[in-house]
Length: 200
Image (cartoon, rainbow, N blue to C red; front, top):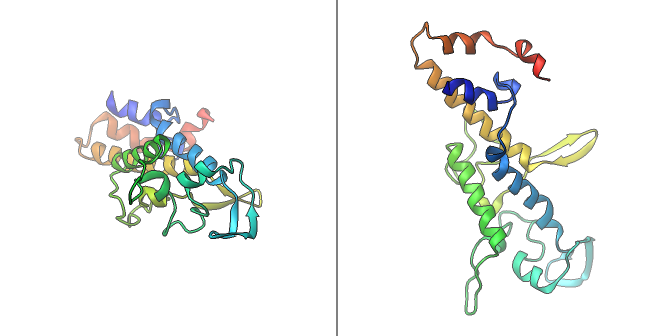
């Protein structure tokens, strides 16, 4: 039934089977790959307006056309610059539309926000705070966390966590609306992490 199908795709922590569909995780995977790749295109300068100020981080695609598209030091200050040069049309005479990848990133981000029931710029949800999806797409950046003693950024995980938390909340509300003796209600309440341990 629809409840069993929904639960199959949820992770064990939400009493699911962890069988995610590729079509569901594709937007998060795309955004995660973009966050890893695009900020590493250009050298980061100590002063974005002065190349003589020194390079603080080497890029892998240092080209004039990339600088025009991405913007120098854009990801040093997310609120001022961030993804704006990559996602939004530039102003002034001779302005060009943003690259297709930037437009696709923005569409994926807005789609994920819509699926998670989050309005752009609405701020973290008070009942279940989001990791990243409360951010507007031009300021999208993963949550910093430590893994094996190292600082780790994983946008795909952050997005998937936000989306699955919302999906679980929706599923609980749908099941709560069923009659008390319904089989779906009984199954959700009786299944816990231990009973799904065989999945791992």
